[in-house]
Image 1 (cartoon, rainbow, N blue to C red):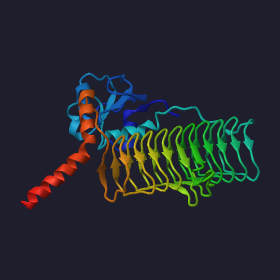
Image 2: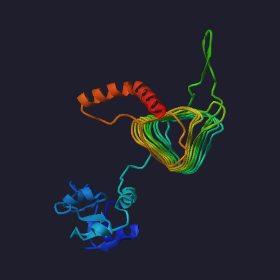
Image 3: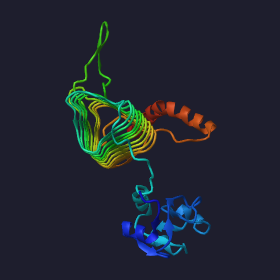
Length: 341
């Protein structure tokens, strides 16, 4: 892969307006503070304007509103952050994955393997697995029987996929994630807990990214479903029969209980807890550490929890919170008394 680009080439790739030296060589992306003369940086937040006069970047990605505040080379775009994201793909210099099937990999019977696939060292592929063209299976991965993996999907090292899972094309699954383990299904009995065998599976759409050590449980009867374009951060728990709509983003440490449906284009911030058997509409945005205990039928931003405060103030407010029920009861009595008068 090419190691450097002329600014004119990058402008053409982005459809950007080039102002400055078209021959400026760019070999990497960097922050405004750390950039050198051959780095391209960007400004997406006006709070970083203070660095425009001191940055040593060879050029900037910048929008028209801020372009006149910077005298150096620049690519003027509508959304510098999106432009940066697009260019990050061509500046990520990774060694090519192992070509073909590593001699230590184990393949089951009746597998269907596409063209140009890569299976790394010590990977285990079960019976009846289908790997489409361009699939990359990292070292130490386990792919259960009868699983299907779509074209150009990549599994980093040590991903575990249980049996009968379906994964779409152009997905990225990071190390340690587990797809298709049993959901948390047990029936109480006088003798203890009776396990409910999970007879469904997991369906993952196209262009889905799943972070490290995230777990997505298989369905009890119907399948757990992750829609196209969903992005899921590290250490997220998604329970059985959950349905996630397309392009929904879920940040780290979120837990979603079983049989909940989350709509399309939602954002779920970090450490959110969502109870089971709920429905969240499209374009719902949940702020960090919220507890969602009821369905949400309209798009918008929702929050719960207690904001950070000095400990002394927090303790006072916590004590008052415990008194809310008695205060509400007293208020109702006062309103009735005054109403009777």
